[in-house]
Image 1 (cartoon, rainbow, N blue to C red):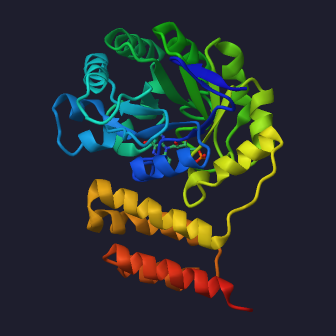
Image 2: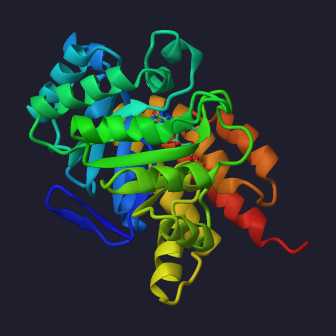
Length: 329
Ligand SMILES: Cc1cc2nc3c(=O)[nH]c(=O)nc-3n(C[C@H](O)[C@H](O)[C@H](O)COP(=O)(O)O)c2cc1C
Protein backbone atom coordinates (compact mmCIF):
# COMPACT_ATOMS: atom_id res chain seq x y z
CA UNK A 1 0.00 0.00 0.00
CA UNK A 2 0.96 3.60 -0.47
CA UNK A 3 2.23 5.33 -3.59
CA UNK A 4 4.36 8.18 -4.83
CA UNK A 5 3.33 11.04 -7.00
CA UNK A 6 6.12 13.27 -8.21
CA UNK A 7 8.44 13.37 -5.24
CA UNK A 8 5.73 13.01 -2.59
CA UNK A 9 5.00 9.65 -0.94
CA UNK A 10 1.69 8.67 0.59
CA UNK A 11 1.99 6.01 3.22
CA UNK A 12 -1.53 4.58 3.08
CA UNK A 13 -2.73 6.32 -0.07
CA UNK A 14 -5.73 7.76 1.77
CA UNK A 15 -7.33 10.11 -0.75
CA UNK A 16 -10.23 12.50 -0.62
CA UNK A 17 -12.25 12.05 -3.82
CA UNK A 18 -13.27 14.87 -6.12
CA UNK A 19 -16.87 15.95 -5.60
CA UNK A 20 -18.34 18.83 -7.58
CA UNK A 21 -20.12 21.12 -5.15
CA UNK A 22 -18.41 19.58 -2.12
CA UNK A 23 -14.63 19.05 -2.27
CA UNK A 24 -13.82 22.74 -2.26
CA UNK A 25 -10.76 24.20 -0.59
CA UNK A 26 -12.48 24.32 2.81
CA UNK A 27 -13.37 20.62 2.74
CA UNK A 28 -9.91 19.70 1.46
CA UNK A 29 -8.14 21.68 4.19
CA UNK A 30 -10.23 20.00 6.86
CA UNK A 31 -9.81 16.50 5.39
CA UNK A 32 -6.06 16.96 5.02
CA UNK A 33 -5.86 18.05 8.61
CA UNK A 34 -7.84 14.96 9.64
CA UNK A 35 -5.46 12.63 7.85
CA UNK A 36 -6.27 12.61 4.13
CA UNK A 37 -2.91 12.34 2.41
CA UNK A 38 -4.02 13.47 -1.01
CA UNK A 39 -7.06 15.23 -2.42
CA UNK A 40 -8.54 16.00 -5.80
CA UNK A 41 -10.35 19.25 -6.58
CA UNK A 42 -13.86 19.52 -7.93
CA UNK A 43 -13.85 18.93 -11.66
CA UNK A 44 -13.22 21.97 -13.83
CA UNK A 45 -13.99 22.35 -17.51
CA UNK A 46 -10.90 22.38 -19.71
CA UNK A 47 -12.67 24.62 -22.20
CA UNK A 48 -13.71 27.07 -19.48
CA UNK A 49 -10.07 27.32 -18.38
CA UNK A 50 -8.90 27.85 -21.95
CA UNK A 51 -11.48 30.62 -22.35
CA UNK A 52 -10.23 32.10 -19.07
CA UNK A 53 -13.66 31.88 -17.47
CA UNK A 54 -13.49 33.90 -14.26
CA UNK A 55 -15.84 31.62 -12.32
CA UNK A 56 -13.69 28.57 -13.10
CA UNK A 57 -10.36 29.84 -11.77
CA UNK A 58 -11.33 29.64 -8.07
CA UNK A 59 -12.42 26.01 -8.54
CA UNK A 60 -8.92 25.17 -9.75
CA UNK A 61 -7.11 27.16 -7.04
CA UNK A 62 -5.16 25.27 -4.41
CA UNK A 63 -4.61 27.12 -1.15
CA UNK A 64 -1.32 27.40 0.70
CA UNK A 65 -2.93 25.76 3.72
CA UNK A 66 -3.80 22.59 1.80
CA UNK A 67 -1.93 19.33 1.66
CA UNK A 68 -1.06 17.66 -1.66
CA UNK A 69 -3.92 18.25 -4.07
CA UNK A 70 -4.52 17.54 -7.75
CA UNK A 71 -6.70 19.68 -9.99
CA UNK A 72 -9.19 17.65 -11.99
CA UNK A 73 -10.09 18.70 -15.52
CA UNK A 74 -12.80 17.36 -17.79
CA UNK A 75 -13.26 17.56 -21.54
CA UNK A 76 -12.84 15.41 -24.61
CA UNK A 77 -10.65 17.41 -26.95
CA UNK A 78 -6.97 16.53 -26.47
CA UNK A 79 -5.82 20.02 -27.50
CA UNK A 80 -8.12 21.81 -25.02
CA UNK A 81 -7.26 19.32 -22.29
CA UNK A 82 -3.54 19.83 -22.89
CA UNK A 83 -3.84 23.62 -22.97
CA UNK A 84 -5.96 23.69 -19.80
CA UNK A 85 -3.44 21.50 -17.98
CA UNK A 86 -0.59 23.75 -19.15
CA UNK A 87 -2.45 26.87 -17.98
CA UNK A 88 -3.05 25.31 -14.58
CA UNK A 89 0.61 24.36 -14.26
CA UNK A 90 1.56 27.91 -15.29
CA UNK A 91 -0.54 29.40 -12.48
CA UNK A 92 -3.74 30.44 -14.29
CA UNK A 93 -5.79 29.77 -11.17
CA UNK A 94 -3.42 31.45 -8.71
CA UNK A 95 -2.69 29.74 -5.41
CA UNK A 96 -0.06 27.03 -5.17
CA UNK A 97 0.85 24.55 -7.85
CA UNK A 98 -1.17 21.33 -7.70
CA UNK A 99 0.68 18.08 -7.13
CA UNK A 100 -0.86 16.57 -10.29
CA UNK A 101 -3.37 17.07 -13.06
CA UNK A 102 -6.21 14.59 -12.77
CA UNK A 103 -8.37 13.77 -15.78
CA UNK A 104 -12.04 13.00 -15.28
CA UNK A 105 -13.20 9.93 -17.17
CA UNK A 106 -15.90 8.94 -14.74
CA UNK A 107 -18.52 11.67 -14.50
CA UNK A 108 -21.88 10.02 -15.32
CA UNK A 109 -23.99 13.19 -15.53
CA UNK A 110 -26.03 13.44 -18.75
CA UNK A 111 -24.96 17.01 -19.53
CA UNK A 112 -21.29 15.94 -19.48
CA UNK A 113 -21.66 12.51 -21.10
CA UNK A 114 -23.78 13.90 -23.93
CA UNK A 115 -20.77 16.06 -24.90
CA UNK A 116 -18.59 12.96 -25.09
CA UNK A 117 -16.87 13.93 -21.81
CA UNK A 118 -16.50 12.23 -18.41
CA UNK A 119 -17.48 8.56 -18.49
CA UNK A 120 -18.39 8.77 -22.20
CA UNK A 121 -14.64 8.55 -22.81
CA UNK A 122 -14.67 4.97 -21.51
CA UNK A 123 -16.23 4.04 -24.85
CA UNK A 124 -13.22 5.40 -26.73
CA UNK A 125 -9.94 3.92 -25.49
CA UNK A 126 -8.04 5.35 -28.48
CA UNK A 127 -9.21 8.85 -27.63
CA UNK A 128 -8.36 8.16 -23.97
CA UNK A 129 -4.75 7.50 -24.90
CA UNK A 130 -4.63 10.61 -27.10
CA UNK A 131 -6.00 12.82 -24.32
CA UNK A 132 -3.66 11.42 -21.68
CA UNK A 133 -0.60 11.67 -23.89
CA UNK A 134 -1.49 15.24 -24.98
CA UNK A 135 -1.86 16.30 -21.34
CA UNK A 136 1.34 14.51 -20.30
CA UNK A 137 3.24 16.23 -23.12
CA UNK A 138 1.90 19.64 -22.07
CA UNK A 139 2.92 19.58 -18.40
CA UNK A 140 5.78 18.49 -16.22
CA UNK A 141 3.37 17.63 -13.39
CA UNK A 142 2.35 13.98 -13.01
CA UNK A 143 -0.95 13.14 -14.66
CA UNK A 144 -3.54 10.87 -13.08
CA UNK A 145 -6.83 9.61 -14.47
CA UNK A 146 -10.07 8.71 -12.71
CA UNK A 147 -12.16 6.09 -14.46
CA UNK A 148 -15.18 3.87 -13.80
CA UNK A 149 -15.63 0.11 -14.26
CA UNK A 150 -16.99 0.69 -17.76
CA UNK A 151 -20.05 2.09 -19.49
CA UNK A 152 -22.46 -0.66 -18.46
CA UNK A 153 -22.45 -4.25 -17.22
CA UNK A 154 -21.87 -5.49 -20.79
CA UNK A 155 -18.87 -3.23 -21.29
CA UNK A 156 -16.65 -3.60 -18.24
CA UNK A 157 -13.58 -2.37 -20.08
CA UNK A 158 -11.79 -0.55 -17.26
CA UNK A 159 -8.64 -2.70 -17.72
CA UNK A 160 -8.45 -1.73 -21.41
CA UNK A 161 -9.04 1.95 -20.59
CA UNK A 162 -6.44 1.73 -17.82
CA UNK A 163 -3.87 0.31 -20.26
CA UNK A 164 -4.66 3.18 -22.65
CA UNK A 165 -4.07 5.66 -19.80
CA UNK A 166 -0.79 3.98 -18.92
CA UNK A 167 0.30 3.98 -22.57
CA UNK A 168 -0.51 7.69 -22.69
CA UNK A 169 1.81 8.32 -19.74
CA UNK A 170 -0.49 8.45 -16.69
CA UNK A 171 1.29 8.08 -13.34
CA UNK A 172 -1.71 7.07 -11.25
CA UNK A 173 -5.18 5.66 -11.84
CA UNK A 174 -8.26 5.75 -9.68
CA UNK A 175 -11.03 3.27 -10.38
CA UNK A 176 -14.58 3.75 -9.14
CA UNK A 177 -16.04 0.24 -9.19
CA UNK A 178 -19.35 1.22 -10.77
CA UNK A 179 -20.40 1.62 -14.38
CA UNK A 180 -21.72 4.83 -15.86
CA UNK A 181 -25.17 3.30 -16.12
CA UNK A 182 -25.14 2.51 -12.40
CA UNK A 183 -24.42 6.15 -11.60
CA UNK A 184 -24.20 5.83 -7.78
CA UNK A 185 -26.64 2.93 -7.32
CA UNK A 186 -25.85 -0.60 -6.26
CA UNK A 187 -22.55 -1.67 -4.79
CA UNK A 188 -19.11 -0.86 -6.10
CA UNK A 189 -17.51 -3.92 -7.69
CA UNK A 190 -14.03 -4.39 -6.26
CA UNK A 191 -13.40 -7.32 -8.66
CA UNK A 192 -13.03 -4.96 -11.62
CA UNK A 193 -10.69 -2.77 -9.55
CA UNK A 194 -8.52 -5.84 -8.98
CA UNK A 195 -8.51 -6.53 -12.72
CA UNK A 196 -7.26 -3.01 -13.37
CA UNK A 197 -4.57 -3.32 -10.71
CA UNK A 198 -3.37 -6.50 -12.46
CA UNK A 199 -3.55 -4.91 -15.91
CA UNK A 200 -1.22 -1.96 -15.31
CA UNK A 201 1.99 -1.27 -13.48
CA UNK A 202 1.16 2.28 -12.37
CA UNK A 203 -0.37 2.59 -8.88
CA UNK A 204 -4.12 2.06 -8.71
CA UNK A 205 -6.39 3.69 -6.14
CA UNK A 206 -9.62 1.85 -5.37
CA UNK A 207 -12.82 3.81 -4.98
CA UNK A 208 -16.46 3.19 -4.18
CA UNK A 209 -18.29 2.99 -0.86
CA UNK A 210 -15.09 2.86 1.22
CA UNK A 211 -15.81 3.60 4.88
CA UNK A 212 -13.90 1.03 6.94
CA UNK A 213 -10.36 -0.22 7.49
CA UNK A 214 -11.54 -3.71 6.41
CA UNK A 215 -12.50 -2.31 3.02
CA UNK A 216 -9.13 -0.54 2.77
CA UNK A 217 -7.32 -3.79 3.56
CA UNK A 218 -9.50 -5.63 1.05
CA UNK A 219 -8.57 -3.12 -1.65
CA UNK A 220 -4.86 -3.26 -0.74
CA UNK A 221 -5.05 -7.07 -0.93
CA UNK A 222 -6.56 -6.75 -4.39
CA UNK A 223 -3.51 -4.79 -5.52
CA UNK A 224 -4.59 -1.20 -4.81
CA UNK A 225 -1.95 1.16 -3.51
CA UNK A 226 -4.45 3.62 -2.14
CA UNK A 227 -8.12 4.14 -1.39
CA UNK A 228 -10.29 7.09 -2.28
CA UNK A 229 -13.15 8.22 -0.09
CA UNK A 230 -15.65 10.72 -1.42
CA UNK A 231 -19.18 10.65 0.06
CA UNK A 232 -17.91 9.03 3.23
CA UNK A 233 -15.97 12.20 4.05
CA UNK A 234 -18.92 14.58 3.71
CA UNK A 235 -19.79 15.53 7.29
CA UNK A 236 -17.21 13.01 8.48
CA UNK A 237 -13.71 14.23 7.64
CA UNK A 238 -12.69 12.24 10.73
CA UNK A 239 -12.97 9.10 8.60
CA UNK A 240 -9.37 9.70 7.54
CA UNK A 241 -7.93 9.81 11.07
CA UNK A 242 -10.12 6.86 12.05
CA UNK A 243 -8.83 4.79 9.11
CA UNK A 244 -5.24 5.89 9.56
CA UNK A 245 -5.33 4.82 13.22
CA UNK A 246 -6.95 1.48 12.39
CA UNK A 247 -4.44 0.79 9.61
CA UNK A 248 -1.42 1.73 11.69
CA UNK A 249 -2.67 0.04 14.85
CA UNK A 250 -2.66 3.31 16.77
CA UNK A 251 -5.27 4.13 19.35
CA UNK A 252 -8.09 6.33 18.18
CA UNK A 253 -10.46 8.50 20.12
CA UNK A 254 -13.57 9.54 18.24
CA UNK A 255 -14.00 13.32 18.57
CA UNK A 256 -16.89 14.45 20.74
CA UNK A 257 -19.89 16.10 19.11
CA UNK A 258 -18.60 19.46 20.35
CA UNK A 259 -15.25 18.84 18.67
CA UNK A 260 -16.94 17.73 15.47
CA UNK A 261 -19.18 20.77 15.34
CA UNK A 262 -16.20 23.04 15.97
CA UNK A 263 -14.60 21.52 12.87
CA UNK A 264 -17.87 21.95 10.95
CA UNK A 265 -18.03 25.62 11.92
CA UNK A 266 -14.43 26.08 10.86
CA UNK A 267 -15.15 24.49 7.50
CA UNK A 268 -17.93 27.04 6.89
CA UNK A 269 -15.59 29.89 7.89
CA UNK A 270 -12.88 28.67 5.55
CA UNK A 271 -15.45 28.50 2.76
CA UNK A 272 -16.63 32.02 3.63
CA UNK A 273 -13.07 33.32 3.36
CA UNK A 274 -12.97 31.98 -0.21
CA UNK A 275 -16.47 32.49 -1.51
CA UNK A 276 -17.98 35.17 0.69
CA UNK A 277 -20.36 34.68 3.59
CA UNK A 278 -23.66 34.32 1.76
CA UNK A 279 -22.45 31.71 -0.76
CA UNK A 280 -20.61 29.78 1.96
CA UNK A 281 -23.62 29.78 4.30
CA UNK A 282 -25.91 28.62 1.48
CA UNK A 283 -23.50 25.88 0.40
CA UNK A 284 -22.93 24.83 4.02
CA UNK A 285 -26.47 23.41 4.21
CA UNK A 286 -25.66 20.06 2.68
CA UNK A 287 -22.34 19.74 4.50
CA UNK A 288 -23.85 20.60 7.90
CA UNK A 289 -26.80 18.27 7.30
CA UNK A 290 -24.22 15.50 6.91
CA UNK A 291 -22.38 16.53 10.10
CA UNK A 292 -25.69 16.40 11.99
CA UNK A 293 -27.00 13.23 10.36
CA UNK A 294 -28.55 10.88 12.90
CA UNK A 295 -28.27 13.38 15.75
CA UNK A 296 -31.13 14.36 18.02
CA UNK A 297 -33.19 17.17 16.44
CA UNK A 298 -31.34 16.87 13.12
CA UNK A 299 -34.47 17.38 11.01
CA UNK A 300 -35.53 20.65 12.66
CA UNK A 301 -31.93 21.87 12.80
CA UNK A 302 -31.60 21.21 9.09
CA UNK A 303 -34.65 23.36 8.43
CA UNK A 304 -33.22 26.13 10.59
CA UNK A 305 -29.83 25.87 8.87
CA UNK A 306 -31.57 26.13 5.50
CA UNK A 307 -32.95 29.50 6.61
CA UNK A 308 -29.65 30.79 8.03
CA UNK A 309 -28.03 33.75 6.28
CA UNK A 310 -24.96 34.49 8.37
CA UNK A 311 -22.03 32.74 10.03
CA UNK A 312 -23.32 33.90 13.42
CA UNK A 313 -26.64 32.15 12.80
CA UNK A 314 -24.79 28.98 11.79
CA UNK A 315 -22.68 29.14 14.96
CA UNK A 316 -25.82 29.56 17.11
CA UNK A 317 -27.50 26.59 15.40
CA UNK A 318 -24.45 24.40 15.92
CA UNK A 319 -24.50 25.33 19.62
CA UNK A 320 -28.17 24.37 19.70
CA UNK A 321 -27.31 21.03 18.08
CA UNK A 322 -24.75 20.39 20.80
CA UNK A 323 -27.21 21.33 23.55
CA UNK A 324 -29.97 19.14 22.08
CA UNK A 325 -27.62 16.19 21.83
CA UNK A 326 -26.68 16.57 25.48
CA UNK A 327 -30.30 16.39 26.67
CA UNK A 328 -31.37 13.20 28.41
CA UNK A 329 -33.79 10.95 26.54
C1 LIG B 1 -21.93 15.01 -5.34
C2 LIG B 1 -20.83 14.26 -6.04
C3 LIG B 1 -19.99 14.95 -6.89
C4 LIG B 1 -18.96 14.26 -7.56
N1 LIG B 1 -18.12 14.96 -8.37
C5 LIG B 1 -17.09 14.33 -8.98
C6 LIG B 1 -16.15 15.05 -9.76
O1 LIG B 1 -16.21 16.27 -9.90
N2 LIG B 1 -15.15 14.33 -10.35
C7 LIG B 1 -15.03 12.96 -10.20
O2 LIG B 1 -14.12 12.36 -10.77
N3 LIG B 1 -15.90 12.28 -9.45
C8 LIG B 1 -16.91 12.92 -8.82
N4 LIG B 1 -17.75 12.22 -8.02
C9 LIG B 1 -17.52 10.77 -7.79
C10 LIG B 1 -16.70 10.54 -6.52
O3 LIG B 1 -15.40 11.10 -6.63
C11 LIG B 1 -16.56 9.03 -6.25
O4 LIG B 1 -15.94 8.40 -7.35
C12 LIG B 1 -17.90 8.34 -6.01
O5 LIG B 1 -18.74 9.12 -5.20
C13 LIG B 1 -17.69 6.96 -5.35
O6 LIG B 1 -16.95 7.07 -4.17
P1 LIG B 1 -17.64 7.12 -2.70
O7 LIG B 1 -18.49 5.89 -2.59
O8 LIG B 1 -16.50 7.16 -1.75
O9 LIG B 1 -18.50 8.35 -2.68
C14 LIG B 1 -18.79 12.88 -7.36
C15 LIG B 1 -19.64 12.20 -6.48
C16 LIG B 1 -20.65 12.87 -5.84
C17 LIG B 1 -21.55 12.10 -4.91
